[in-house]
Figure 1 (cartoon, rainbow, N blue to C red):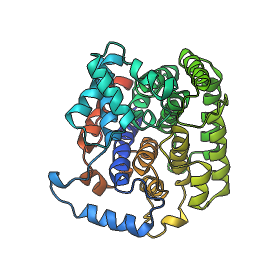
Figure 2: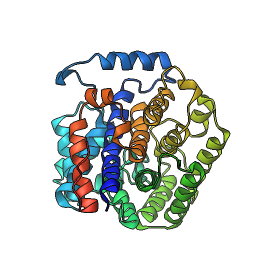
Figure 3: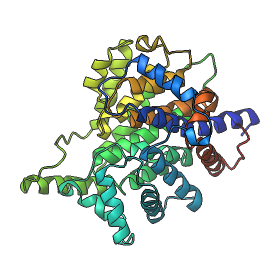
Figure 4: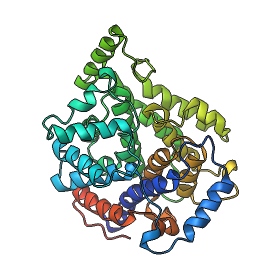
Length: 378
């Protein structure tokens, strides 16, 4: 790998993990709001810039805590090890439970601890009447897998699926995480020059082609999900709703992303209605991808705080939509960071967000594992 290309790719590795952190840290303050206007965002950024000292950094949430565990496990084992990753998830939670973890994933961690990690998939399989969770908890932490398996898409898909199954066994949950992982990989490996911009239409079409193969394949986890769903229906068990079992679920959501992108400036209420901003994987991961692609161009709603930085624009636009702001901004930030590199993450954000130094170190380790080279940038 040439020196120039090595520095560019190294920058993208760091950009992806740091982009995820700044999205999480900045987005956390606005979670669950119906919309976030630019005045509130501007005031928050001004306040954030005024923070000084290590003790006054903006804190990260469970999104980053679990992302760090994924990266640590891959780096330590140099491969996916389900028991090790599950143990890191649980130990991180018990050491610092105040990061905003959801009740269902906490139950998984408690079960893992009690059962001494005998079967790291059992607790998640039993949730929601056996149908499993389809929340976005897999997608929010998956960026390190995209870096680790950058050059091997089949390996990437397998690790993304298996690592997500520790907490989310519904096919919408793990397929959503796979989609997010593929989006980070595509942004990371896209060869671009300042004068040649990524084709947004082709970016979506490439994801659609990959997801057609994934969603069209009935793997063991998918079979188990279908069987559990049928059993739950017979028992009239109340689950998370959304009984849809379309084979090409995410392919159709990606088509919505493609259509919305073609419209240009779309009112935020339309994005919330069509794509969603919730905690379900299918109502947040396509939205994160849309935010990345939409924000390659200026956004009218952000005109008062847009300073020409597409990565910052991506994160702020994702937050402005409201809803699950920290997770959607984190996922969008990881894709944008993989494309634009660490140089595009505002220096003030890097200085003020907790965990950036650790993310930088982990990205360099993952870069070495993926390429065999030493990361010398940043």
